[in-house]
Image 1: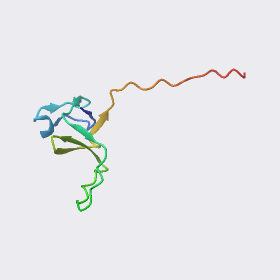
Image 2: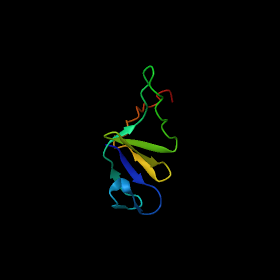
Image 3: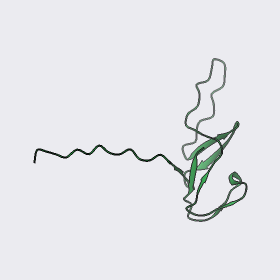
Image 4: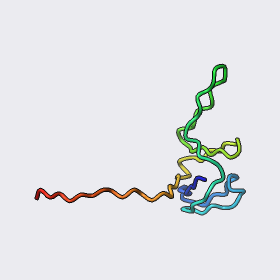
Length: 91
């Protein structure tokens, strides 16, 4: 499930969170799956709607909700990979 941080600078009461206030800077977990791409339509099927450039899309059982970039930051829980630092032995 994706996590988002409120970066709006203020508290938000969002329908997406069942009207629970989300404090400025608070991180919340959202039910659903982050939509990163659309499947290619099969012959005769219409093109799917494009993914907005200014928002994240989360699909929850076929219902998609947009999380605007101006208000929400996607939080990555995965630890950053350690850089492979090698000492320069030529000096």
